[in-house]
Image: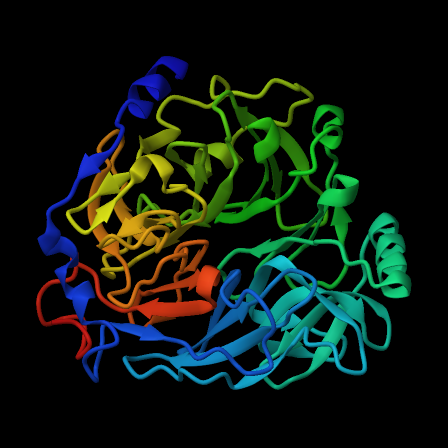
Length: 448
């Protein structure tokens, strides 16, 4: 397996013709643009676009755009189920504090359904930590109902210090995209990780290997939850150590540590879960310093419990590594070597054919001579060792330092997904409606 990985890592940069992304020139120019910019609320402080999260329920899709960690809030946008999204926030009260403290996390998480203290509520987001009637992990729903989830004692104690001294700490979060998702949370400061099983507000701590619990502040700064037949795979990145820790859970509060991926510089810089190969199970997408890898989620779930501290790819069964690929460029996009390819990753079924495409953020990429304007690179990766760079997204209004692609999610509309991405360098967030993979005339009025 290690030999095949090295062969796949040799892909390097590939070249894509301009026809695949020529539509991008029309954003912000036509009245029915293929790219829609979301309006930054006046109440937002710094970093609009640092984080993005999404949730869908009964055909309605919401996107939450977050700002600077710990000092700003987040704003909710209703993008509906068609080509006419709301560009003005319908609720900018997510972690905006006011009379009660709330500190925004670097990664927020969306729920189709969330189990509140009184009832199940639709379209909710876990956004950070703070205090309501009690202190804990703050969840806010579309109907503006809010509640706090209990956390492990070490996390609660640190939150008490935060509230007393106004010194916030980050609590990154991730969910899967099922109707009743599992929520995964970390506290990098304490090398602590826990999850909330589906349909419950009770947490369950993950047993972190001793080697993973020491020595690196990047613990848990990237996360993914994979929904697979039989349960979930929970993935936690420690990019400073070039490691990704893995657990599985059968749907109960119990979990088993199943191993560690590593051996490549920067492994775990960004993580995402979604169905890439069309088998109905979520797969794991993980970036390192130079490349992106796609790993079969069902194969990960089949791994046995282990106490091994070894990190590599050798423990994966044959065929588990579906693909690896590097940065791609076009005549409009240059600078792969400095692009920070893989700063964020996402999976979305952009053409509605049942398997997902991999979307990779390259926030330092040069766009039409605008340095660090940033771009989104799209790959077909469902077939083993046959990844194809098929599309590129950028804003024709791109400016120096936008850094599009620092954050990415794939909201669901109709029978397919679109892309939502943050460009926090200049406080922007955008929706990308079109894909070169869609047959002509099938993508709606926004796509020529």
